[in-house]
Structure formats: C-alpha cells, structure tokens
Amino acid sequence: MNRYAMEVSGGCQCGAVRYHTTHMLDNSHLCHCRMCQKAVGNLFAALVAAPRETLVWTRGEPARFRSSEHVDRGFCRDCGTPLFYDSTAGGRVNLTIGSLDHPELFPPGANTGTEAQVPYFSGITGLKDGGATEDGQEAWAAAISSSSRQHPDHDTAEWPLTSSSQ
Image (cartoon, rainbow, N blue to C red; front, side, top):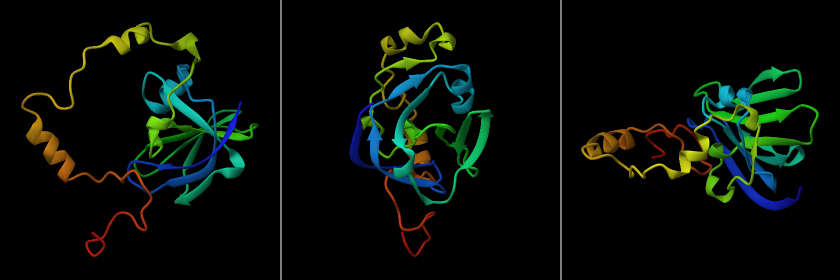
C-alpha cells in the first residue's frame, strides 16, 4: 500500500469534531460487511486510511464504540456522523470518505466484505439520474439551505459561528 504526502482535513456534520492529516494511503474502498453497514447506517462504508501517526484531531474528540474486540468505530457524539474505522492492532485509521472535506479526491478502488453486499448493489450505478432537486421542491431546498447548521467543508476558527463572526 502506497503512502502519499497530502494535506487532508475533514470532520462531522455539526463541526464539533474536525481532523487533519498530512499523509494518506491508497486503499480507498467500499466495505459491504454487515458491521460496516450498521456502523454507517447505509449499504456500505466508504473508507480510506491515514497513517495513525499523522492523524490529528483539530477540534473536539470523537466518541468511540468498540464494535468488536479488535475495532473501534469513531463518531461525533453531538450529531452522530460516522468518522472512522480503527483496527486497534493496525498502524492506520480508516476515515469515512464522506467525512472528508474533499471526498471526490478518493474514488473507491475496491469492494470488500462482499459476503454481505446487498443483491441489488451492482445495479445502483445504472439508476436514472433524478437531478439535483425534484420539480416543485426548489422552495423546500432553499429553506433547508438557508437554515443549515452543517459545518462548511473547510476548517473554521470557531463553530458554530456567532453573530459577531458571520
């Protein structure tokens, strides 16, 4: 597995937990095992690893759940965002690709844990493109966007923003 020097940051949806690393590994993958499905509440967990010694928590600390004798799952205790899969015996931490500020930089290169892969997974990429917003939903989408408490995809000096810092 190759190691690449690159600045990467990410965090949870509410901004209570943020992280930074200076190196990434080339193991981007989708894990379909049942434990990963449950941990992220989805059909699979999209993961990519950072060497443990390069990962720094820059805001807050993640909560941990020991999902097995050998694995910790990290998440934000405030908003519930899944942040990582940490094999306690390994030298790396697998970050959830969706928690990265730039998830587009890490396209998955493999499927793992396929014994639990849902049967319809292979047809998902062939689904009809439903578009960004359904007809008649523009006002709803605008209302959600204007009242969003989601942390932006970059580091901030403080969060949540106060009225004096907006």
